[in-house]
Image 1 (tube, helix red, strand yellow):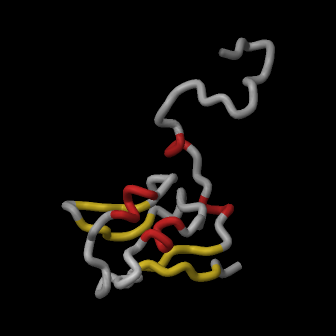
Image 2: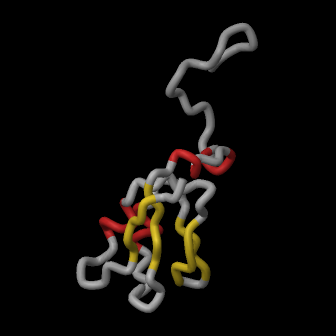
Length: 93
């Protein structure tokens, strides 16, 4: 635990549930794109996303929270091979 006189130790998470407080989408070089015609709403993407950037409502994947998506591509790589509803595209500058 840090006091007011010294900065916090790097890499220490002092409390859980803080990731949503930081917008990190600006780091992204690639962005996920979903083809809703192919998507079977298995929600594997929602489970594996380290940034909680998959938006799901009523058991369906409806899109991405691009303010928090870092473009890691886990959603696309874990989308079932026979489906490939999520692909990664280069982010426009």
